[in-house]
Each structure stands twice: as C-alpha cells, then as structure tokens.
Length: 556
Ligand SMILES: Cc1cc2nc3c(=O)[nH]c(=O)nc-3n(C[C@H](O)[C@H](O)[C@H](O)COP(=O)(O)OP(=O)(O)OC[C@H]3O[C@@H](n4cnc5c(N)ncnc54)[C@H](O)[C@@H]3O)c2cc1C
Image 1 (cartoon, protein in one colour):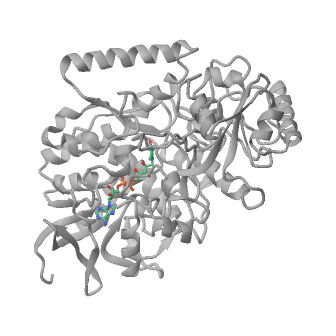
Image 2: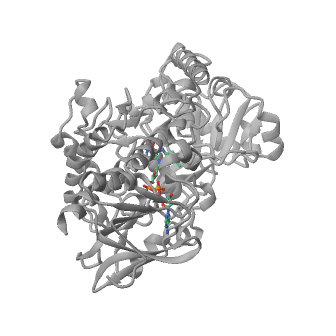
Image 3: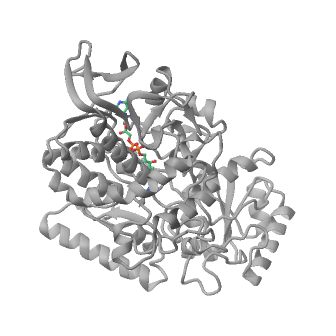
C-alpha cells in the first residue's frame, strides 16, 4: 500500500444505515474500522427517517407466531421485482442473499444489544400478491434515551418524529385522535411517556433517531472510530484494487489505507439537482426530504474508477406538499392524508389518474408518468369539508386554523362549491364535477372501478378504520371544498452503483472491483423499480452493510 497517513482493516464512507452495522460486525471478529462522515452529524437520512426495516422471516414474527419463510418471501419478491437486464441491482441472486441474510443481520444486531421489535401491523404494499405478509415484516428500534449517548448526544442527526417519542405505527394511529378511541389512547400513552421521561430526566427519541442512536451507542462502546466533517473525495486504487480513500483531517489532505476493503454508504443523489436533471428529469431537489449530505459524489467517484451504475431514474417518491410557511426541515409527506376518505388526487385537467391509497413510490411514478401526457406537476389533492374537519391537511391537525394564511398565499384553494374550487385551481369546472360524480358513485358501490382504491389491505390500512362505510372511500359532497398542490417529492433516490450478492462493486462487464463494497442508496436497489413494503431502504442498507463486512472479513 503506497503512502498512507493511517491504516484500518475496513474503511466506511458515510454514516448511513449499514455503516455502524458493518463496523460492529468487523469489531465482533476483531477487525478495526473507521467511519468517515462528511457532515457534522452522525446517522444520515437513516437517522431522520421512520427507521422502519423490511426484514422477511425475522425473529420477531416467529416470536409472535406469524408465519413466514425464505420461500414465501422469495415468492413475493420474485413476483414483484422483475428480472430485467436494466435492473442489475435486482438480480435473483441478490434477492436470495437479501432474504436469507436480512434476518441474520437482525439476529446480529440483537446480539450486540440493539433493542428492536416488530410493528404490530404494517401490511406489505402489494398484499394481493403471492407470498406477501399482511401482518407485515417490519422491524423498528425501541424508543431511545438520547442521554445514553453522553458526549455524542448532540452529534446524532434528528428524526422527522423528533417532537414526540412515538413509534411510527402509533403516529399513524394518533392522527385519528379527534374521532377514535385508538387515536386517543395513543395520545394518552404519549403523554404518560413524556411525563415519565421528564420525571426521570430522559430525552426519548423514536424512529430513525432511535435506531441510529442505539447503533451509535453500541459503536462508541465498541471503540469504533467515527469521524465527522471528514468528506471522502477519492478512492485510492493500486493495481486494480481499492486500497484506501482520500479524506480530510483537521482541514488537511489525509489518506487512509484499508486492508480488507472500503465500503461506500454515502447515500444517493436526491440533493444534487444536476444529477437529478440528468437521471430523473422533471423532479426537483427541493421536493426531497433526504438529508443534506445526499449529494451523490461517491456514486460519481465510483463511476470514475469503473463502477457500473443502474436504475438511476428511480427514487423513493412521496406525495409531497410545499406549504409556504413550512418551518420544519421536512416538507409534509401526504400519503396517509390522501388515502383518507373524502379525498382524491386529480391532474391539472381535473381527472383522477391513480389509486390514491397505494405505495408512495408508485404514486410519484404515476404523477411523473401522467405528466408526460397531461400536466400533473403539481397535481391537486381535493377534499371536502368532512375531510377538513376530520383529518390532517398538509401536516396540520384536523381543522387547524391555517386556512387564512394558506389561502392568502395561494397555497390552499377553497370554494363553497366544486365549481368555485375548480375555478380557483384553473380546472375546467365540468371536468372536476364529472370526476367527483364518478368517484362518489364508486363510493356508493364500495368499489373504485377505475383504479381499485381500497382493493388491497394496505390501502385500507392507510385509510381510517373508524370511517363508517369504507376505510379509504368517502364521498366529496359537503362544501366548502379545498385543494392543495401535490408534487412528486421523494425521501431519497433508489438507483446507483451496481453490486453483487456479496455487496461487491461491479464494473459494466460484471467483473468485481476488488476491495470495494457498497450499500444503501448509493447502490442500485435490490428491489428494482418497486417498493415491496415499509423499510425497503433502511432494511437493505443495514443488510448489505452486514453482508459486505462478512465478506470482507473472511476473504483476505
Ligand atoms: C422522513 C423520512 C422518512 C423515511 N422513513 C423510512 C423508513 O421508515 N424506512 C425506510 O426504509 N426508509 C425510509 N426513508 C428513506 C431512508 O431513510 C433512506 O433511503 C435511507 O436512510 C438511506 O440510507 P443510506 O444508508 O443509504 O444513507 P444515509 O443514511 O443517507 O447516509 C449516508 C451518509 O453519507 C454521508 N456522505 C455522503 N457523501 C459522503 C462523502 N463523500 N464522504 C463522507 N460521507 C458522505 C452523508 O452525509 C450521510 O450522512 C425515509 C426518509 C425520510 C426522509
């Protein structure tokens, strides 16, 4: 190895989902890792996220008596994720590796003291497909007391649920608190938790921050070297093998050698507008809730040394609104809202064009596809007064007094009649009326004949179980009517560096770039162009990190 300032067994670029998992595995077999994070915070978008991991056949399902198996999960993925030449991240060999290693990765985390549990109910997104799981395959971290991090406490990136120590599934129930006992009981639980935390001096966090907080605590306890403000600018290659990286230390150039390998876990390119224009035209970095470090340079650097990239046009889309007075670092993600009764989505001509209650990735794909033939960016979420009083709108509580400010700025359109609303949105009144009349007739029948909204268990789960006639279908019939513009936003990109079933980086010709591994949204997803269930970004990031470390630890 040429002139290096320092050497480790394993060098990890970025502190995303798989990073600390890989480093902990290395430590468990007596190897030393360094994690180099370019920002001032640990945890990446993973820390900001819901922290949900999609793990088929996991130990918590077995403990709860929920049936699953490798075969069943493979049946589901094989039917859903097509084997295509242009999705080399999603080969059958990679799917098989994912399905068998993901539960082992969870067992490994548990052995390292990471406290996890399963969400009680989170149906797979395509539950009508063979091999799906209706109870769901999601695993999350137990709530975590930030004070357990000691001096690292302020270094953990914050989650989108930072305001309340709530499990994601509880958050979903909480939004029905105005009219359901389940929602109210979650509110009571939350208040009791907050009071208990105050009395005991705890600072509880949930979701991604709980997951990455627990990982960080374990990593610090294992003496893993984690360095912030340490951007990696270059992969160092000698005789065709990646032997280290170029980074900064105290503002100076610094070369770190890697005896067993380098792993890229540096996120995707959601925050890089130039890359978006090249690969996902028509989308905007401002519509993304991905972390600030998601700027894609490690994908470009891997390409420079010969790595293949694929599936670059894919992103984990989300129906997003952009309220003008948004004071959070996250824009409202409205999948859960638009799936509620008395709400529909229409394009700028006033026509529905999709099942509003399905997967968020599919929803954004639908908006982008629709926009090729009819203007649909933004589309309009249309609701009536029943919706307005009962459910959240663009992240605010039911009936919240945001209306005036939003109307003044033009973000929220309102009309006493559908005709008035159509005029306010510059939609043909007759078209919108026709759309709503047709939709209301479907509600009457309990069947959406156009887009099968409510056909899946998942659609209903996203709706409102307490709604009398149907969980996701409700008529738009009581004025005033309201509309907000909806964009094909995202929570990250889904294409990137092509890797094999050991997480090794591949060239265009399919040969391995020796010494280089990659995981997470830096890579072309093992799920191809679909999102099979909640946690298909974080679960794979952890799992491929684990697979990479296992491979690197034994092959040299
Ligand atoms: C609000 C929200 C909720 C979400 N909920 C879920 C969920 O519940 N489940 C799920 O599966 N997905 C969820 N997602 C998506 C998911 O969080 C991300 O896709 C995933 O966390 C990406 O993880 P990663 O490991 O690839 O990278 P990240 O966690 O993004 O980590 C990458 C890190 O690398 C650093 N980095 C980048 N370049 C360099 C460089 N050159 N040198 C050094 N460091 C670098 C970045 O700063 C960053 O810290 C959510 C996203 C959001 C925004």
